[in-house]
Length: 157
Length: 157
DNA sequence: AAAGATTGAGGGATCAATCTTC
DNA sequence: GAAGATTGATCCCTCAATCTTT
Image 1 (cartoon, rainbow over the protein chains, first blue to last red):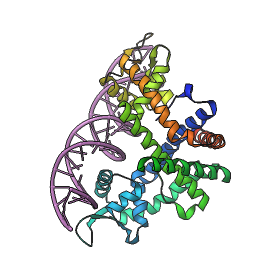
Image 2: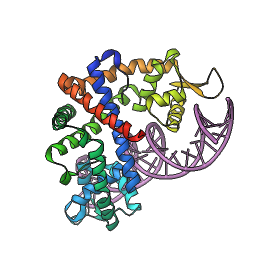
Image 3: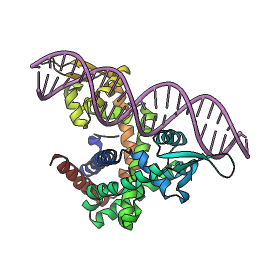
Image 4: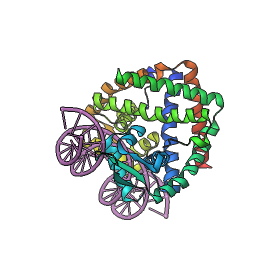
């Protein structure tokens, strides 16, 4: 979101913030581009397929899926509509009680995610994980924990 | 882009990658939401206003602006069209030679960015920078440098 | 009314095609 | 032809409104 807040940040702060901003932007662009080229999937498609393919029975209630991904229900609904049109998943009525739908992986969806996941992993390693030392990875995880904890506390408190 | 690549990542790698992914997503959501609520600007609006407002004469050639932001020309064109409709910037023909347009900050654009920038800085501090130690900021900057250098080398080589 | 889900509109990002000026 | 810029199509995301079932 931010570019130049320079006058009010010291040099070290600015370097960290700008770096984070640029890395976030460019790494995401790289990974989502390669995913799209190699597998024909958007990042959102991929996340849905991974979540559903790991669920027992390769099916998941829509409301659960939304929670797992941290998505709004309308976003999930639109996304599933697009993916259903392409044959990657289908909707089925929930077994017990008719309130709620389930998202079910199709055979095509299964094949697609099985082919895409190893490639995406390789890209993630090559462009990120394997470039960093164990200490750097540890610090990054710490940073994420701190920031996420703050965001949660702040929104629920 | 990625959620669960767990089987092929060790615990430390997974923690760092998942943490980065979640932090990237949620921090961006928080900052862009507060920017929109407080100033009526999207992240893209903000970046354009900051860049133009810092240029000499509060004006900037479109091609330069695109380079500075790392945007495609069509993205910039669409964005400027929307911002022009809202009166935040306007287009003018380039002084020397008629090839190329300039994007010029309007009085409204000036007022808007002057009001928005301090709030956005405060949000960035409160939700990110001020939560981290100098050592953590330093490591994050290092990580960003490594990853960005790799991405550049990889795309140009 | 509340929970689960869908829909439509509108901003946003990317791609391919186009147009103009040099 | 190449650089600078615009346009239209399409997908993605958010919001507000709606619909259904309990």
